[in-house]
Each structure stands twice: as structure tokens, then as C-alpha cells.
Amino acid sequence: MNLCPCGARGDGSASCSCTAQRLASYRAKLSRALLDRFDLVVAVPRPRATELAAGAAEASAPVAVRVALAREALAILPLRRSADADALLTRAVDRLPLSGRGRARVARVARTIAALAGTEEVQAEHVAEALAYRSPQELA
Ligand SMILES: [Zn+2]
Image 1 (tube, rainbow, N blue to C red):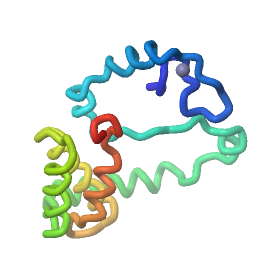
Image 2 (tube, rainbow, N blue to C red):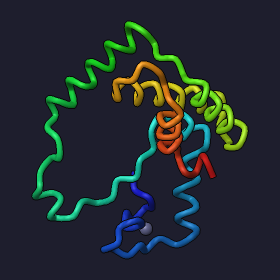
Image 3 (tube, rainbow, N blue to C red):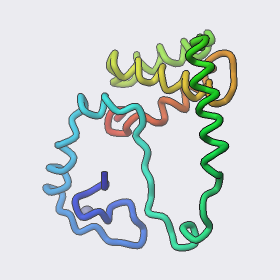
């Protein structure tokens, strides 16, 4: 979704014309309960012409192979969290407004990140990356 109704917010080359009231109304449509149901919330700025002309940084085929291998690995043996990863997840639940559903999603995303990295255990860095994909509104 756009960051604002006019779509210019967050774009350095455009000027947002939304009023504060319109922006608040737009954001109010995204309740915390709804945001809680997304695994990943990632800002994607509008690409510049040179970025579009450069093409893909990585071909899709190798990525598809990595994803298939990670899925197989997770299906065979679910990854366990290290003690540090568990401690970080516990601290995040205590300090952030993270619901039970949000905690489960962070844990699942961390497991996926670890599987894609080819590790045998979910590390704290994987949990930290998964936390970074939570909505800034949710974590505020
Ligand atoms: Zn706007």
C-alpha cells in the first residue's frame, strides 16, 4: 500500500498533498489487529530510472532453488532456536507491544530466515531480522 492516499509520501521526488486529517483517517484503516496478521512489512521506495534499467540483481532460478531447499529442510526437521534467539524473542515480547500472534509470526519468519541461510539453528540475528520486518506502527 502507499504510505498516504496521494502516494507521494516517502518519495523524495514528489510532494505529499495529504492533510493531517486525511492521513490519520487513511492510517486508521490499518488496525493493530490487521497489521498483526502480516508476516512482513517492508517499505519499498519507488525505483529510479537507472535502477529499473539495471535489471534484476539476482536471477529468479537460483532464488527458487534456495527457497525449495529451505522448505525441504524445514519440512524434514523444524529448526530450534538457540538460547540467545529465545532470549531475544522473550525480550521483544516483554518490551514491544507484540501479541501472541505477533510473537508466533516473528518466530516463524526467523525460522525461515535461518533455513534460507542454511543454518541448523535459529540464531539471535535471525530473530532480530524477523523483528525488523514487523510493522513500525505495531512496534511503536
Ligand atoms: Zn500524500
